Length: 213
Image (cartoon, rainbow, N blue to C red; front, top):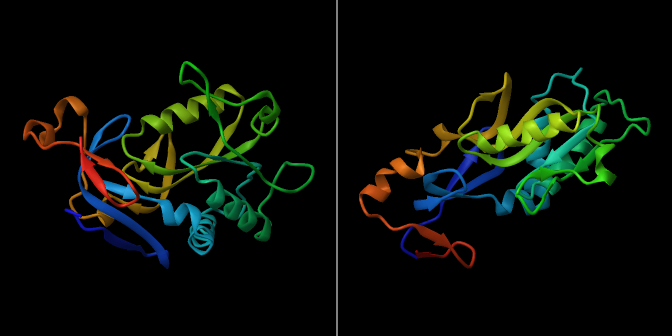
């Protein structure tokens, strides 16, 4: 493998580990010089539990949370966030005193939507938005607009890795930011110096391996 996997440890816990590979990669909105891998944090029980606990510790104890909206396959982390909220007796408006954990879908026009059976978990509910990465803020804007369209009230945003500090007046709480990954950069696709330098895009295949596009 041409580039080596790099590991970065969160100040929130020794078992919260970010794995990244330097190169030239494309997201839906930008080009970046590191591929940030979230697989372990999203799928390993102990890591997901540690992330969930660390996020909840940053919430004021009087924060009302009814629903966690998960993006980027963060449902396991979301379940642990919900568990920590209930364990910490955070207030909730839900009659059954438990927290919803839901995921939006995308329709044929690539619009973010909630199906009819989930609208009750969004409308007039206090929401925590949870995602894996926030690079440019465009996904955050889209998600907030969707939640607001369905009548939800976003109380907090959690992103495992974020290059965005705040959006629409809401702070983005993260386990890692750009200062934790030395030299991390995100570029607009039409103004990417890696492209101008004729560095080919890397495509992730078979886990940590990759190939040139």
